[in-house]
Image (cartoon, rainbow, N blue to C red; front, side, top):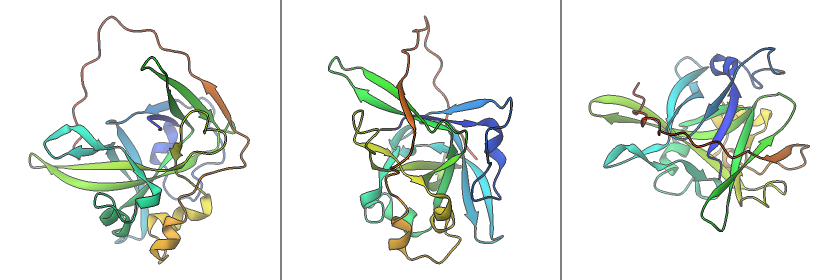
Length: 221
């Protein structure tokens, strides 16, 4: 299951597009996103009829502890029917996060997880499908989101059985709710991306630090 992905820093503020950029800007910095970190999520504003980027935390909070994520992923097969996600799906609380590469984890017999990086290799941004929700945490608003997932492609199946739902450019408007597409058509945009010439490489194991970094506080907006 995807627990990490990267994007280019300049993609965070670009909104008026179907495909954000046509290539990787020279000298741009790659940003890594993980659960519980703030993500730049593209949403459609029905009042202004325009796309916006809102900062949201990756992970819907648990009811008894905002620092603990209850949900990070939402399965596409039941995204329109489960109690946790159906109201968001049908309420058009759907967003897109632009990615450059993403990771999948292979569970090893010794209990460790081996990370593999999937790279389209062309520097062209692609959109992950997300759902989002607004919360009130200690009197402050919190925007949080979950990634939609689909069955793994043939490339990724040796590592895991799930992967992010990567939207085709032509499906962005339907997923964001810019059009009056019926729910079944919107759900159909969440499909496994096959037939692509991508690479998948094992990530080198990081060297352990002597001290653990401090836990991040939830991002409030």
